[in-house]
Image (cartoon, rainbow, N blue to C red; front, side, top):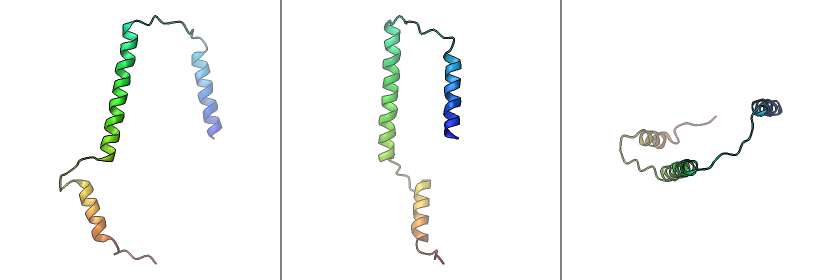
Length: 82
């Protein structure tokens, strides 16, 4: 199944690239500016993702996570397995 998927992807890529020419692009200031800006965006997203994954900083008492955690703590041990 996976091999058929990869074979289909490979076939699609070869069909797309079959008639394209790989020409040298003139690398002016805009070329590097786009790379720098996109790199900064990716870096900021990575930093904020890690930051909020480690410490989300939610302090509200009626937040859904607190309701779920309190409910689990209250019901812990009530359900018996057979």
